[in-house]
Length: 201
Image (cartoon, rainbow, N blue to C red; front, top):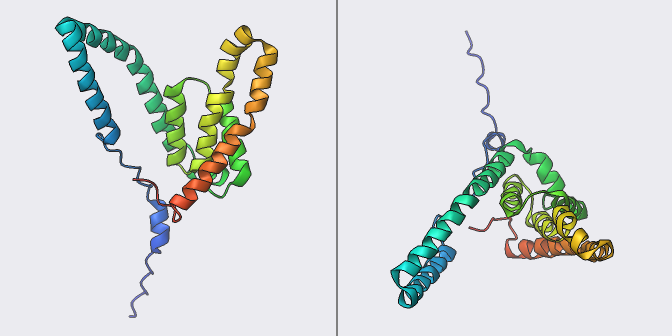
């Protein structure tokens, strides 16, 4: 009896496509953390020399209370970004906001940033999630800049009642092209810094 022919193994590219993309490894201690720690240590010494231990403890207690109030929002924002990175379809995000999305990707990022609610605890985790699932630097920069300049929440809550309708509308109209230009510049610079698409370490 002749043996049945063995099936060819699946191509390596197909197997690689099925595997989840590894996320970027974030170092818990980087140069920015070291700089901040040094500045904190210098500040502690200066306050201690001027106000003694009581002055240091007063500032520490106040900051711990502030940290306790902010921590739930930070946790909620980080969880939102993590879940979005798992929920959003990588192919669609890459097609709509990826390096080859052109002007359309920058406009989508700008529109998304303008309607994105919440503060920095929402915006930055969402931006990190978009980068993880295939959005490029240009579209993500456009989203963050748009959220900063065009966010409807601040316009409705602060600008309209304090500065009036005319100022708010003119300010938004003048700011409209800035996220697109910033995203285009970010994409231009990124492509030249990382021509092979290698993400920064």
